[in-house]
Image (cartoon, rainbow, N blue to C red):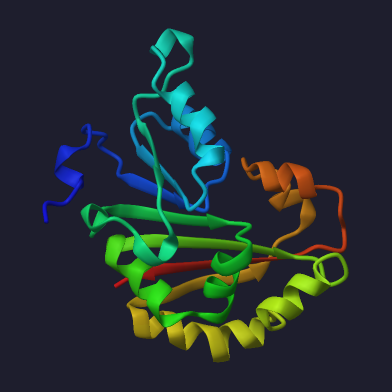
Amino acid sequence: MKSLKGSLPRTGEGIVIDIGTGDGRFVSAMARATPNKFFIGIDANVKPLEKPSMKATRKPNKGGLANVMFVQAAIEFLPEEFTGVADEIHIHFPWGSLLQAVAKGDDKILSELRRIAAPECMLEVVIGIDPERDKSEIERLGLPDLSGQYILTKLLPNYLQAGFEFVETRQMESTEWSQLETSWARKLSGRSTRFVRYIVLRAV
């Protein structure tokens, strides 16, 4: 099947995919800030995509964004046309099955991420968990403590196996993650007990 990359507008600075994009705030904000990149927001739920999709198709003088596309798709079944397309992949504050997949290193999901990644694609994952507020969800998903030791000794080998190399991991301060252009970051800002783990990898 033909790759989507050749049919997209020429951007010059790459293609960015945001998985679990929700209402598309990150995609829309970054597309305005960096018009030479093409942004694709993907979410399994079609409802939150309707409004940003409609806005993106407006004329530029009415807030439209020619360098944006929104796609309804589950992480387990990303479109075949996206193979090798992404120069950057972002996953910010995932929840439910997406959170479980990236925090536990699900083989199938990581393989899908590697499939859509171009060589040297940057994969950025930001996971935010509040041990008290999210206790029931942590237990339901069987989530581990996302310590640096767990990341390096348990999680990283799964990403390496899928075709990614380690770049960086650290805990993000609230003053840093609250500035991310996502609706979840805005909603969660001010909650000092939330542990936010930042992970960066690169496709090899």
